[in-house]
Length: 219
Image (cartoon, rainbow, N blue to C red; front, side):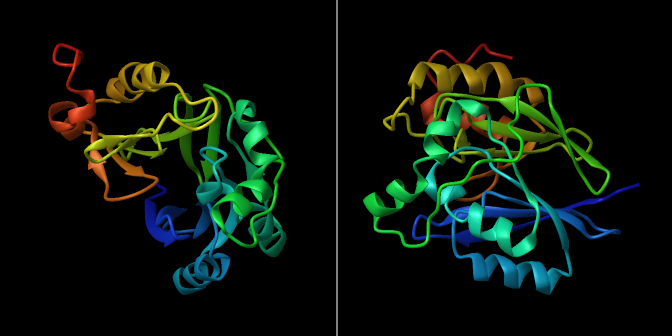
């Protein structure tokens, strides 16, 4: 049976968690959210002996997607995701880079957009796609049910939630995505966030101060 492995590579001045996910036997892999520092990502791929076949994007902010075009060219693989509602962000990555003083960011058009209910295959390991808007309108989350792990981008963090003061962010929509999509995965699900340490759904349900109001009875 395929065995899921994951590694986190902090990239950009925002310390964004670029993730490598792969099947341990075949070493077939995907890169999730290559925001920048492409050489660092390539070094990790080589060190782990991985065969990267895909690039996944959870959403269109520069610290998650700014290096996708360059990495696509270097690896010769497709960029997949996020939901098409984030097209305006991906078409403005170079401008985002100028705003934040980050060099090398380029606009990117995914080879495939994702939507709720899609599945992605990484070396025989299937990930379900959830559309979880709020931080951005096209944000997606990747869920691996057998390993009980999710890659949630900037929807949910240990002790915090995603910002909603960016263009087309919406706080109520974000909270609804967490309640109606992530909480239903179950308390024993672990997750990798776009920034900071990993956590579990149960830990955040019980302790996250941004989720306390009106959440106590939610199952």
